[in-house]
Length: 301
Ligand SMILES: Nc1ncnc2c1ncn2[C@@H]1O[C@H](COP(=O)(O)OP(=O)(O)O)[C@@H](O)[C@H]1O
Ligand SMILES: [Mg+2]
Image (cartoon, rainbow, N blue to C red; front, side, top):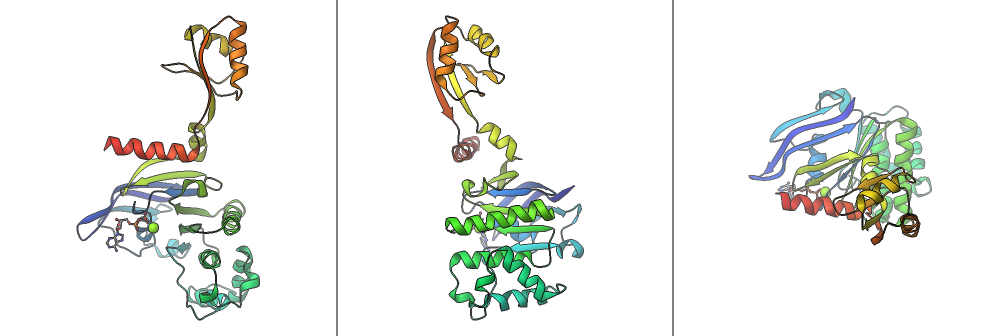
């Protein structure tokens, strides 16, 4: 089953569309990295999901029910933009107020549980206004985790954190996903931040989804390979297949994916007297891939 299904969703503010015909599918049990530049519509999408905004048109389903279903909604944990906290109250009191607000059972135990999850047990007595940005973000994640929600909607929770803060949030989310089966939709404008946790990706640009795929497919498209062009590409292709399993013939040459030393490929071709006119090791990193997808779609439009 899909945890989230968004179909043909549009949202306009004073006649200007922030989202246009958006389609998003978040499978149950996934960590869905929702990526897009600033202003692309991530927060708007997440606010619509949480019922903080009303759609102009389109449909949102959560676990195959209408998104306003009360039972489903009570199973969602949310952090959008900034945690809603009282500046003069402590970390502990802010969490307790939220726990009481949403009516969790055993609030004391629950507050202590989420504090531990985000490594903030030692800072529970600190006033919110005295917390660093990283602590505030972690507190926001802790708030979202109150009451063991099945579905987490997190809007840029890693934004602006230092390496340690990022690691804590990443580890918390991965653990919730693996151990408790929590489905997580997490947005960012930096792909690299999500690449260590996401199992699926959706790329949004100008209010529409331009790519959606499992992380495995993404890393497949971002693989390293040795590229070679030879005097006889047909012969070289056949010969390379006798040694390598993942050889692909392109218009202008050949790619060998299961080799990362170009010298091994040229040496192998040389043994069969195939002249190599060009050889290089190529790497398409995640970030580069993302930029390519983004710019490619700009030209299409
Ligand atoms: N309440 C609002 N009123 C008017 N325009 C808005 C409002 N919220 C968002 N927008 C516009 O919608 C677009 C998408 O914004 P947003 O969803 O916040 O993007 P992101 O979270 O990806 O940075 C932007 O152009 C933004 O200016
Ligand atoms: Mg945003």
